[in-house]
Image (cartoon, rainbow, N blue to C red; front, side, top):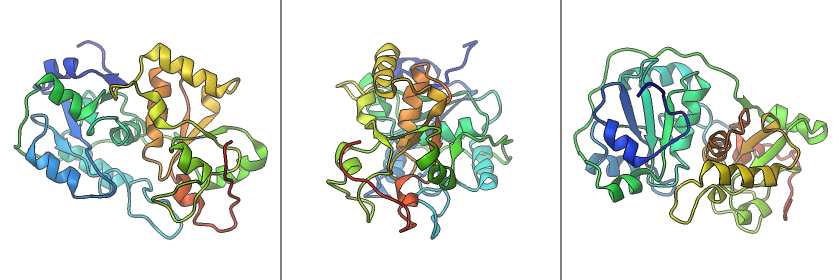
Length: 284
């Protein structure tokens, strides 16, 4: 391939390239309620040659008293991990999870944040690969002895910026959680329910078709423009419970050619660390 993929990619295309030495497949399967499930599933079977990325250990740093549940990883340690995976500037990275892309999108975003644009999410994930009859393996990938080069950008906002935006309204905060969590009717994970005042809700499930794969780019674009109204893409900041599944919405906007939105990494779980922060319930 002369061009690289940078948003979504089909299982059919991946099947033609999974043996290519300059393609790197990363298995991001994970279950927040059962952290051991993802690694065990990988050990049992995965796309041949794929490495495994653990959400808590590889795609986030340890949470602190003021952080959300999945803060940014230590960039030096992240570079070491990428180097062991064999990443180099021309590598085409394919990330996948069990299906929707809600977890794989976190690594997609992290790689873009360090300047690596050759990364795409396998649309439909492991489920799509299985449905295609793609090859499977239980062999663990070999590690490499070198670090990857990083060029850390600034595609995210801090809690301080969210605080300032309460009155300044420089950007629109879009929450990817389910409507019940956004309104405060149900909160199965975090100790406080509700949302940040001024935020609007766009559940990540709205990016998907009935088969669990992403809507096509035109349908995504229409759906997002209807939600954003006059707000330009670059004035959009995405959030969720901990800064992981919000990347799904950011990916959807990029796939719809709505470029430039950012991520609130700390998200709801960091916002509620400070009892002085205002909260809202009910619909936006």
